[in-house]
Image (cartoon, rainbow, N blue to C red; front, side, top):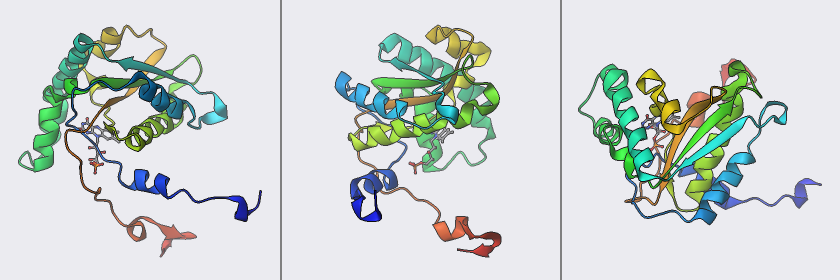
Length: 206
Ligand SMILES: Cc1cc2nc3c(=O)[nH]c(=O)nc-3n(C[C@H](O)[C@H](O)[C@H](O)COP(=O)(O)O)c2cc1C
């Protein structure tokens, strides 16, 4: 293959640079074919030694979604909410609404888990989060809203593993609610690369 054989894909950059955290989702069901496309993208992520230690639990059942939202609320009220100093910002209000029960509105919640029989916890995150990111991008590419949250897995007393009936070697790491957006969000605000990048040496700016 030469550099002339490669074709740029502007669609990819459009999807990646517009990916946002969607907290308000419509209850409309997501077709099974789309869920499988999203999962396929997840399974095409890289992992250390190609061990693919992920396991996905796709939650659609309303009662289970409510239980997950209940655990999320407990984690939010129990420790996360109190750590946020300014509770008057629009983003705080949005997250608060979501964490106090809004999460259950998502018609699909994909829980990305790691299998500790395949990979130890010390390298689990680096092999699992690429799959979560692939899922977020695939959902965006299909016109769906999504969001990554680690909050539900901090539900007190291991509630999350109990809700999903996870065996001990399957560890939940990320919760990805997915559905059609209630409204389209604008472009994400991100720091410019020049602020975040060095050339050759830390002291040398880009
Ligand atoms: C590890 C991680 C945990 C997150 N946890 C939550 C969460 O618990 N609740 C929430 O509403 N958003 C959560 N988010 C989403 C972030 O708030 C969001 O990615 C960030 O604010 C950028 O938002 P934007 O993409 O809409 O610009 C989380 C994101 C990451 C990567």
